[in-house]
Amino acid sequence: MAALVGTAGLLIVPTTSAAAGTSEPDRMRAQLPLVEAADVVSAEVRRGPAGGFAGISLAEDHVELWWKGALPARVAAAVERAGDVAEVQVEPARHSEAELRAAAARLEAAGDPAVHAIKLPADGSGLVLGTTAPVAASAAASVAGVPVRTVVEEPLAPVSRQNDAPPWKGGATIVLGNAACTSGFAVRNGANQRFLLTAGHCGNPGVRVTDPTGEFIGNAGAKHADHDIMLIPTGNVVNRQYVGGGDSNTTEIVRGWGDVYVGEYLCQSGVTSARETGNPVCNIKVLFFYADREDLVEGEQMNGQQAARPGDSGGPVYGPAAGGGVIAKGTVTRVAGARIGFQDFRTADRDFGVYIPL
Image 1 (cartoon, one colour):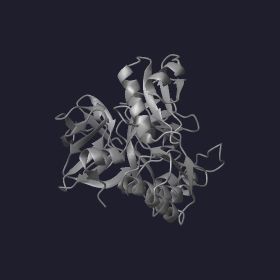
Image 2 (cartoon, one colour):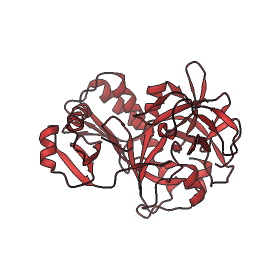
Image 3 (tube, helix red, strand yellow):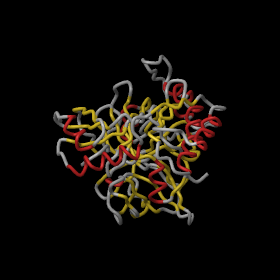
Image 4 (cartoon, one colour):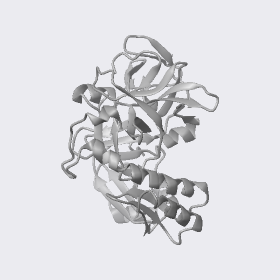
């Protein structure tokens, strides 16, 4: 079953959100205290058993922690600490994330060909199925054992800077055999080896990787096919990414990586979109995490614009850093109109043990 699949550079983007009447960079900066508070809670949730955890979402002016049953004392203490940064409201959830992932596994094993995505609402209310044709929600719910809502929608499909130079950066055109994609982020592992992170579907391990002029970058290395991420070993990288138009040399420093939250607004800076629009694609609101083998994240460009284009694959998904620059959030994988699928950076850290060098 397929799934989905900050900046000084951002500050010049004039686009305004019709819904909120504020510019996209202003909306993203306004969320920084919410993200900081959510990080405090999320870190404590991951630190120990959290059977009741359902999800975390960002509302307009507060963080929502969805929990089934009694909140553990240590998590309650984290909520109180986080409240020094932004309000955190604890909301009751019908199901935990663990329960919903188990239900999703039952649905995936059933193998309905009309179901192309299984989504996890942050509120723990049940599952949302993306389908290519009408599917009886009641029948799916009987298999899953939890409430199910179905949405007939187009499946997200893979999306496959013109002349970067060493040290290699994120947001640049890379050529893998016959495929052109976008570099995501410069990363290192615990052994201080250096890589470019990009999308796994751009090529296979061993393929020669160059810039568009043929300058050698490296040969593709470790790949996690299900999660659609891949490392390109290369000795000369820098923690910067392109944020301007397709031929722009404008870059921003990447100041580490962060978790992704439902309700968060992000940007993506794939090379094709940058070339066609002259800017990153912003005002992308995170909607769902996925519960199948690809384990990706779904967002939507809230002005109805095309969220990504062929050639954007592997490109950086990011938010603003409080002190200027950007924070790595993930890499582009799939698109269907205004909807986008990307892999979050935490998964790359978990799969490959990589981080952003500072």
